[in-house]
Image: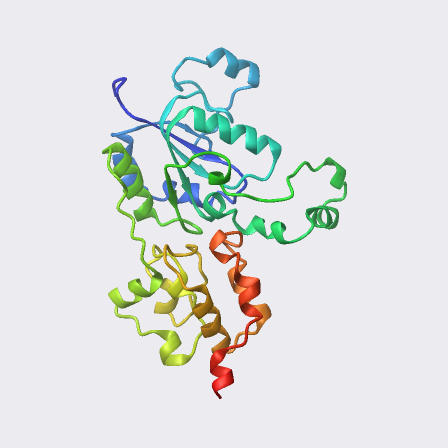
Length: 287
């Protein structure tokens, strides 16, 4: 590889590492990708790490030295997994943004705060006291927030975890200097494409497919299970109608809130949810 080879960095914040593993699971495709891009920073696939003093001495080397938590940079493309949950995370993400030409967030944690954003609806101090023997040693923020809440993001790739095909499309697109071709429609569209009978219409099964971003291939409905919303809110959604449908299919107010407060709990599109579940179902009034 010559000096003109694009550089790739992969970063971890508060997360389970599942989206990083999706990249490693690409296997044969990853080998082909390695011929087109230099993976300069990816701790998940490296056992090497420098101390802070060693890292300082490596500044200006273009990211070719051993891997560090901070990285050296600059990088043509950075993939960021995980949400911001500590003051240190805030500092790190601003640095990652400075040394990255393009920054793409991958997964529900990075794009919507993740499961850990459930803390946003409660008192984090109570959680800390219940989980840790010495909560005074735990430094954390009261909220878990997506990367876009702190720095500009070039593209958000949804999913918990992300889809490997979509990930490869995003990386390839930026290497080719074009916009990623990622669908913006809902899971319902994917059900139609694979010939899956609508489980809500046929069986009255509660399903989040109408308001969930495509990308999973509609796996759950294909096996007679309602969509759980892993890929977060679709670009266009009708939350009032969705809530009425779920209640019509037998879900209580509590269950409706719980089904949305999972992978993408803190998505802004779900902010109106508590007020919606208090409303009566018009179909009940007609009955």
